[in-house]
Length: 241
Image (cartoon, rainbow, N blue to C red; front, side, top):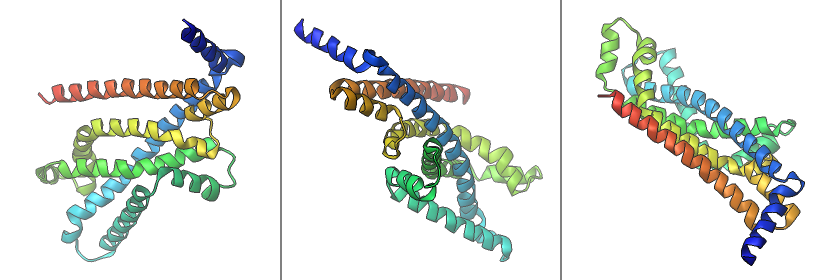
């Protein structure tokens, strides 16, 4: 029973004494805030970029020469550059560039992290949405035209709702990935969940208990959200019958 007493003492030292569990609780709250708002930003950016990219792929060759065609070409090139840069560089480097260079004068590190992770997520969400748009049968565009819709109206009322339904499970998985990626937020002094574990470790000089606690909390959240995604996928499959 000596090992149990040692474990009990370590638990008390790391979490109970001086209410050190509050570091993890505060960090968990910041982690969820960053993830939630970053997902919203990522969806907004991803939808816009995916519409530009898919519109270019579907209509550019058929468009008449003019300002609209030229603007679409420019928009597509900007979107391609954004996707290449964001997907080709580590998220922690993007986070530090945002914090130490772009928003160097800002004192709100939480906001900087939300923007950094949101912009990063937007690149992946864009490709998810673009694959969803491209998977919609071409006949749906013709159906929209036969109803008197122009391209924008067809995209808004017919294509995007179907594409969103197709990619919803993948989009939910992107949320789970983003949740784990926020563990690097401590690089810019944000007290997220991982940083909470580091703070406890720095005070108690005990590595095992704080890091295992952080890992178990992340594992619990990922398992919970994975369960939700599974239920969502089953409900979507049932709705198709």
